[in-house]
Image 1 (cartoon, protein in one colour):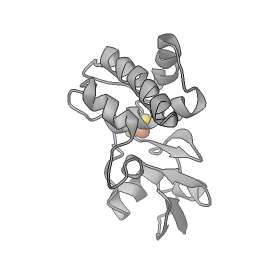
Image 2 (cartoon, helix red, strand yellow):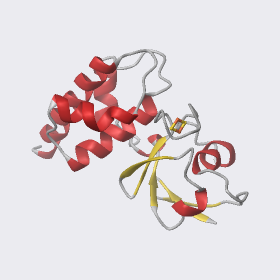
Image 3 (cartoon, rainbow, N blue to C red):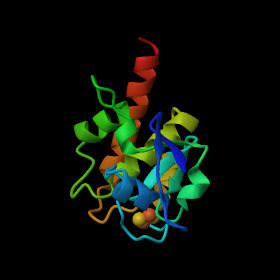
Image 4 (tube, protein in one colour):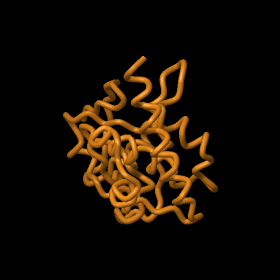
Length: 156
Ligand code: FES
């Protein structure tokens, strides 16, 4: 099957029912997306499918075929990090870092849909992404900062 990941086309042989997360990690060595609960409940495996955040651990790879898949590896360019990545670093919005990739992917989707979210809108949208270290306040701060960074960039 052919998968379009981060604007690059991959031909992969998959097992019936194999999840997109397993294809990314085990077949393509794109290990930025993490396996947390494996049940669609924690958000560590979040990737974007046509810009929509999806839990790749419960998404059969075949259902992603023909759609634009974006993973954490696809956000930064050679020269610079994505503003959401920058903001997470600046606000130190992580502790163990296991949830970070999924958090960032959800935040990217949120800011695409709503470039100026309120604190409450951020909390509501990010509700399905779990951080076991409890860095939620800093994550919300980082997303607020990322929103300003993206707006500043668009005015450059
Ligand atoms: Fe996919 Fe938890 S690993 S939602």
